Length: 169
Image (cartoon, rainbow, N blue to C red; front, side, top):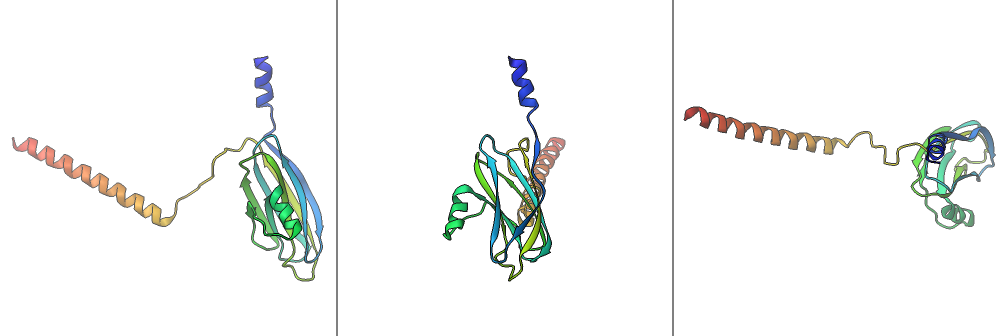
């Protein structure tokens, strides 16, 4: 039984392609959407889009189900992650809670042009469940260096004084 559970755990899929290179047509002044159901586990959502023809002001956003309903009703809504408007974009977001999510392709700022958009969406269930921080801000970096230098020179000065006192005796 334990061996079976271990095999089931380690054989679970890591990175799953949900929407492999689908082309979605988005009308002018409108948006298109597709569902991302993460009802069992949290995961890292990784998505790219590129406009094949039409508007060059498309953006991609990840919304939870409640915010999507607000968008649909014309009410104020929030987004978990969003790209800048353009001909292509990449979105990565670590979903923290299981549930229903919706990926929205927004062409409302695209003028009178519809857009044909190629979309690729992957879900990685084995991604680390912590924020992927790659570097700290320059101000914080300078603070860390200055504090480290002050501590180093403080310890070196203290040690040098103790050594000189021991040599004088």
